[in-house]
Image (tube, rainbow, N blue to C red; front, top):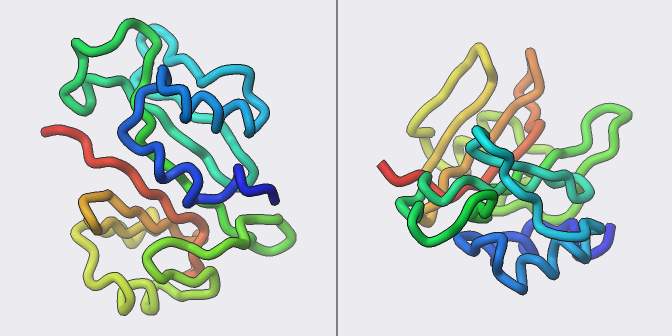
Length: 155
């Protein structure tokens, strides 16, 4: 996978608008002609880049509604999709010292007790370094399926 599909390369764009030249260049390097536009009545947009899903949300989510025009988003989320079974997935290092083969117990040992958890839907949430971190688990398993990192929404 090229460098464009790496978590670290996208994380540096958190908080930038889709008008930012560096963020636009990142999208172009990923094969998109431009940064995605939020459609009318939508609150966010996402695109796939390798084994990542990168997300932009409307500026109002972060108290910045008056700064930008229609369709502009704030780059604010990354989901890393891991390899499971015969499906290929992200193989670069994971954030926060997580390892792809960690169980839910090992994730909690590494990150501490989650602030939110859903045993039925198989996910845990933490706030780490002022970021919202969500670890999703394979259904009926303790294996990590995905790791998502988001800017927190303004209350």
